[in-house]
Amino acid sequence: MRKISCALVGLGVVLAACRGGDAEKKGETVVAVSGAAEAEIIARPLSLRGVSLAGAEFAVDPFGKGTLPGTPGVHYTYPDPAFSKGYTSADYFLSKGMNTFRVPFRWERLQPARNQPLNAAELNRLKTTVNNLVAKGAYAVLDVHNYGRYGAGVLGAEIPIADFAEFWGRVAVEFKGNTKVVFALMNEPHDMPTEAWIEAANAAIVSIRSTGATNLIIVPGNGWSGAHSFDATFYGTSNAEALLEIVDPKQAVAFEVHQHLDDGSSGKSPNCVSETVGVERLKGFTAWLRKHGKKGFLGEFSGGASAVCLKAIANVVIYLEQSKDVYVGWTYWAAGPSWKDYFTSLEPRDGADTPQMISLQAHLSASVR
Image (cartoon, rainbow, N blue to C red; front, side, top):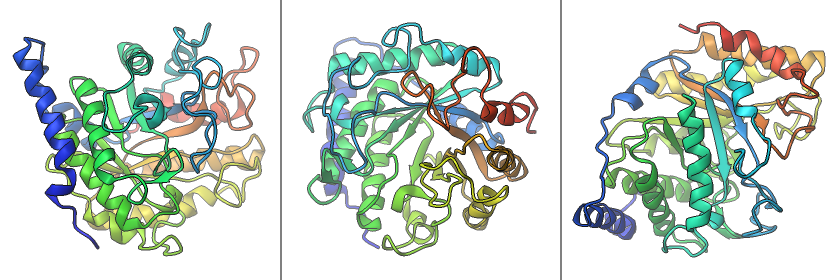
């Protein structure tokens, strides 16, 4: 396992620290925060329960090919009424008992040139969306939906790890005063050395913490972050081994896995393997969390509307409730203004709950303590 060096992340750390200092010199408000809210998320069972509001990451595939940066409102849209006219589903999901929204977005759109300031218009779209969700009392999970890439370049190969750290330093400066915001470092890294991903994640954590941010950080595994393959080696060093190298001085980290319920664990088929498939695929990861005293987050799971899938979805949430000693929460995949008719979508149809929402409902209104 390669260890991260200070030299590697120095650029991101220095820039982040300088931005904080510049703000003080200019007389701008620098928000001081404590780690209390983040510690509460870690300590309180299943604090986060909700759905991914997809849309701002659209028009790009998992290998970085597609429309970048794209035109907002044409190729992609943020899930907020300010950018998607008439979209008010956040209120609907909150009324059902959800309290968390995972907000996917693209690194390239927020920072069109690496190691340069964030794009003001895109940052406004992200901050408006996040601030409006938080104002409703919800948690917002910032999800860099880039699969371990910037464009088609792979992090740690064509894309320097220092660039990733620098980016997260800039993002942290913008959101560090908001204790309802969670930092999810990357969606589903894949086709890269696991060691490179761990190095990048540790670099980002150093850069985030250098800004004074105490927000909860969520770290995924390599190999598409599958729970079912958590200890596999087909993608290189297993996540079960490599993620033990993650270091956070604030100890406010949770580890993210995804687990769809179809045959390939991809979420591309409406057919689920069995009523217990999700539970079976999560058991190894859960055992790892307990063994090593870690916390987990199920960032994506989904299924179709068949009776088998609906039972499988419910069983996953029941299992998480039974394992609440090691899980901080979950977000279902997905909802959002662009996916109303997608087969896993939780968006209400003609004013009616989807079968999947009905399956989740009992586990949203009831206490998990």
